[in-house]
Length: 155
Image (cartoon, rainbow, N blue to C red; front, side, top):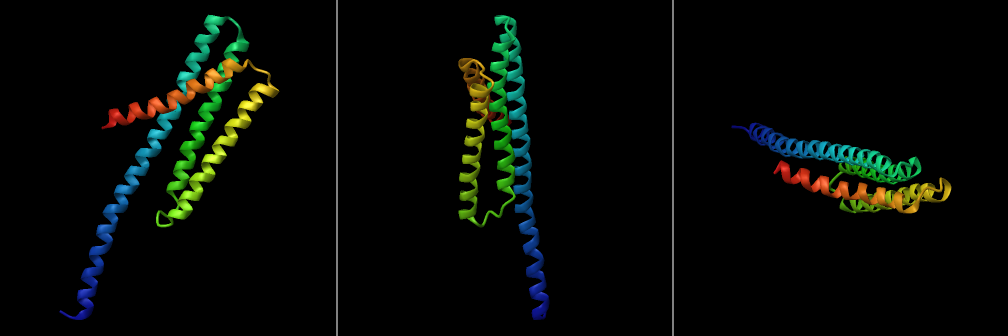
């Protein structure tokens, strides 16, 4: 067996091992994206149901619109989280410093978007503050609980 034949056999093993690792990482990323979309869907569904129930109980569209607006801010936050998580996964995992900087940037971005949207609802649209915050808190609670529940059901 010549030296070239030995090198070829060792090189042919490496891509197969790496391919198995890459495939597992790809599968995990696909499952995470699917979970994130499902959680955002649950958020939207619960916010719509609660806003409809609020309209049925209170009989005033302003209160239901305020709850819906706060909930939509939370849904946008969840969608932005899911989108940015998938974007962060596309960056090289070998550069931990870059990954950390991106996660800090994405967190600050989400915070500023939430503050701006809540300020829009409260200051510009002059919606009822407790209803807006109640809708937002409801949406955030669904974000956390749906994620935990779906992870528990998958395992």
